[in-house]
Amino acid sequence: MGIMYNRNFLKSVLVSSLLLCIVLIANAQTITEEEVTVVAPYSPRIAKAKKIISFPESELNTITKFKLDYYTNPKLISTTFELEELKAARYISPKDPKYKQNIVKGGLGLYITPYAEVFLNKQWNNSLAFGVHAKHLSSNASVENYSSSSFSKTGIDVWSKKTIGKKVFWVSGFYERDAFHYYGFKTREFIWNSDVLPDFDAISAQIFSDVGFNFNIHNIINRKNGNINVNGSYRYFWDKFSNNENLININGVYQRPFNFLGLKNQFVGIGSDIEIAITNWVAPTQIGLGDPTDMVGLSKMKQQIFHGKADLQMFYTIQFDRFDFKAGAVLSAGIDSTSTLIIYPDILLNVNVVKNALDFYVKLDGGLISPSYYSISRENPYVSAFIPLKYSSRTFRLKGGLTANLGGIADFHLWGSTEGLNNDVFFTTDTSRVYNNQFKLIYDSVEVLKIGSDLRIRLGEAFVGFQLIYQKYSMAKEEYAWYKPNWSWNISADYWLYDNLKLSLVLKGQSEVWGIEGKVKRKIGSWSDLSLGANYHFDHNLSAFINLNNILNHNYQQWYNYPVKGFGAMIGVNYAF
Image (cartoon, rainbow, N blue to C red; front, side, top):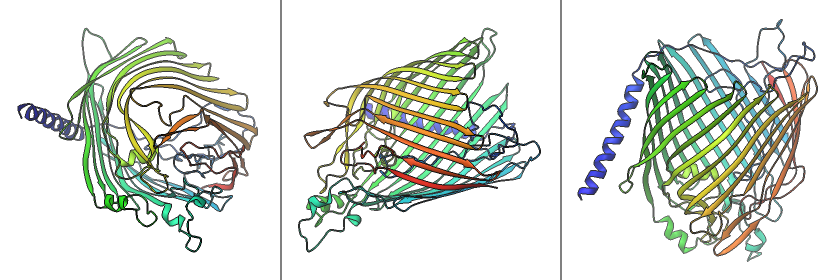
């Protein structure tokens, strides 16, 4: 009892300290500088202007177009299409200062696939701005011999930024609805009575919905007193079968200058990160033939799980000549009655080897990971309800790498890492379901070696990106790292054939993986997915696009028995005003 009392007392002190840090952070004063970024569409009045290697990207709290890519992603749904984003203007005429802040997009693809998206932004005055982003994408596509794989994705996000005195507040509210099917079974194997055909569409249907808000307070007090940043969010997540989850996250960092040995650019800081999840299991995530007794029994076993984590971070940083150094530690604890306090390192060294050209870095860190129904379903939407949610611990992660900029022509990043994970999450087929078309979780301790490279090059009118990752898992108990490929790659290219016509290419893929169904191991072959696109600008405001997806027409799988749809195409228009 004494040990448990001391453990709970330490956790209470830790959580109270975190909350106190956030209260102090929120009450700090700042002097901020408002910056507004607007979107400028294509203007062909300056011929043959030199293209830059990096296109403008939107920040969280600026008035600009949002970046959103649609692509074939069988982890969520197997029949999505890659829709090329509308880039900021390549040319801007000095005679026309009215840059465009609002964009409307629309398109239609094969298999009855409508797409619509709108971005609206408004600067009311020097202290207030707001924006709206809404989207919809759906399709009736299906894979031959399998249950329906139709889907629908709808979402809206409304945000506002307000400057009040010396503080800047940013807040957004959102709603998302993703409808899809657990289509990973062949219907002909389950038609036992030709007189009464099962309604496979209804049986396999699922809907994920979530609503909530995010906020940010950024406060630069001054160089003498330091700066503050606070972020927070609330999300209510639920599915078609009334399983639901409340998610709360609050994190903040405060740092201030520190004088030691007369050296400049020294800082000390404190940070906190609190994650709280309340998961309510209500019913199984599929209707079975005749409601098997195991599902009926499971539906009566309603559960509520309270979990999460609390981190307290303390650190010291210094910038000296071409060296950046950070040394700190994170005190972490799970928010339940069984977890213990764990201390993780937080160390970073960055060296500018060649000024403005080559950097070397090495970092050592770790941390506690608290999974949730929401986070697990983002990785694999075909997961069952009533999954066990256990803490994972990254006991250490040692990572080092090189970053380089070669004369403004190429950006390069080469890195490698090794890490240890206790209770890492893996997916296996849930054989308690009637159709074996959902997944459950297993946990295993692993050591992981990763090596990766990222390269982006400008070659005249072309921009080429290349990413390659190798990873090797050493498992403690399991024979394979289920559904973890050794190799994955992504190649992308944009080429301006004319001043108003851009051609695009994306080639992505991965090596073979292993899955497991009961005691049967399933080998899932390697795959590559090639997509092509074009974007043509008619004038200052209007452009059109065409995207051809999965040109190779491969019904590859990332999850066992979930083949993706083959070839797909979409055409559409973009209008800026």
